[in-house]
Structure formats: C-alpha cells, structure tokens
Image (cartoon, rainbow, N blue to C red; front, side):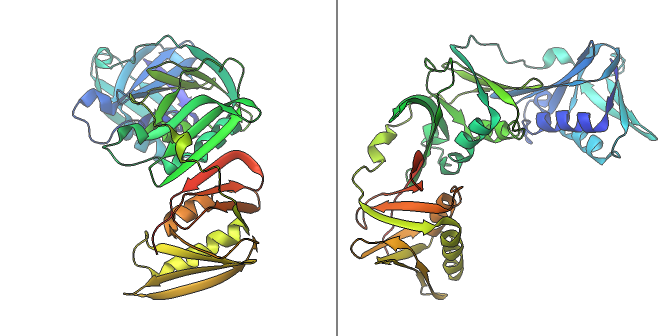
Length: 372
C-alpha cells in the first residue's frame, strides 16, 4: 500500500477512529486502526468490539492495499505535523512496518496483520431513515446529561431512542434517566422510522455520534435493528451494539398534576444557583428554593463553610413553597434551555418537579427534590 493524503484530511479521519479505541487493551489488534486503500479512497476503521467507526476520505492511491497500525500513535504523529503538509503512508507488506513521511519527517511504525482485525458483522436493519444533523444533535444533546453512571442498572447507561405518541401524533423520542433526574426530548418522526424498534444507545456511542453532527447541512442516515444501530454520513459510518436490556416505564415518573408554576429567566437562574452553591464544599449540596409571590430566594446553608442567599424576581402567583434540589442537577437542567424562560411546575416539596422551555413541550425534564 502506498498513498499520499493531505494532513488535515488524515488528522480528521484518524482522530475519529482513534477516539473509539480503548486506551487499555488486552487484545493488541484492538489498539490499531485498519487502513484500506483502493481507487481514490482510503478508509480508516477502528473498533472496541461494541462500536465500530469507518471514516473514508480521498487520497492519491499509488498502490492499493491494507494494513493495521497503532491508532493513537498515528494520530499523535499526524497531529504534530505542520498544517497543509502532504503525508505519505507506505507499507510494502513484507517488513511489518508502515512508513509515514511528510517533508523532512520520517516515521516507521510497527504493523499487525489485517487478517487479525475484527470487522463487525453486518446486520439486517429493520428500520432505515434519514434525519437532519441538527435534529439528531438536539435529541441527544438535551438528553445525555441524565444518563446514569451506575453499573448495576446497566440499562440506564444510555439514551433510549424510540417511537412514541405525543399530542400531535407519533414522534421520535430520546429519554435518559438516572433515577434522580429525567430528560425526555421529542422530534418530528422521520419518514421510514415508524416501525423502528426501541433501542438503548450506549453512553460511549452517544459521545462518538456527537462528532458526526457538527455540520448543520448534513443529513444522517440512521439504521436500527434489535441489536445494533448505525449512523452514517457520506464519509463516516458509526455502528454500535445497543444495550441489551429493558428501559423502565419512564412515563410513570413524569408528573401531570403539577399546578404551581414558576417562570424564570433561565440564564439568570443558572448563574444564581452557581453563585450560592459556591459556599458548599460538596457539589451535591442542596439548594433551597423559597417561593412567594413574584419572588424566588435561593439559599445554601453549609454548617462547615458558610451560608449564601440570593433573590430573583420571577413570575409566580401560587401559595408559598419551600423545596430543595441538588445544585448540580439544577444547573444541568437549566443549561438545557435555549430560549429565555424556564418554566418549573411544582406540586409539593416532596414531589418530582417538571421543567420545560416556555410553552414548548417537546423537551421536558423531571428532577427529584432533596430534603433541606
């Protein structure tokens, strides 16, 4: 194999591949990226056996072929090469070495046989549809903060993507929860997605997928089966196993009878929570919200380090209420609001609280209160 490729193109392709590779590997080949050159294209494939990413880009292919080389090492080398450099990758197949040349720089890297590289078996996907990148980005960005990190409840370690009923008909919905807070985000159901099986997309896959979604003009091809999910752009294909488990019935924890309504400027609210939480040594310290007519008082009392209090002018006309929340959870939920106002709907100090953006019900968040 012998190819020439521009440094920027190579860095992007190898960067996407090497981020999938696990740093600690008991199987040496899994630390490598499989490079395959043919025609005018070169593809870079990496896997951790649960996720596989293939990134294609244009190159001048002098001699077609394939090899595998350390993904992290190749990425580090390319990252340190000067902008705009032409990089030549050369593997004669006999020496067990890949040479990387750019200008006066020359590297020789150990390779492993391409036959040892595990390629994820292709699945038959029950559902195939296309969705604009900004829509998919919103679904996952607004829900991923609530993914659980608890290993025992492994079925919560991802985002549950499924088709659901909403007020205006069927929607594509993403839900994540860790038992303390929940995010539910809806988007218009794309053509071809109606029969999609519900799948739990793992946390790592959600992180890798985010890198595909930066280009607003791009359309993402999504394929879903019971065991796998695939997201593809013209150049990058990300295939992942889904979490084998049953996501709990989240609808039961979304309150419907909360009538006490607080409307507050989301940015001001987040800054105020952040300020009063400064005095507490633990990030999980409860922030107390004291509500009376058109006034919200935020307070933190940390006996070992001090106390803080801040008042905000808000829209609130119900009876007086005191309720406590984990400061970190409040900040994360408030930071999801894109428009100006956040609307909180309370019932009592012991019941779950609902939050949404203005009158928009396509994204709702639930947070459990704390005792204060």
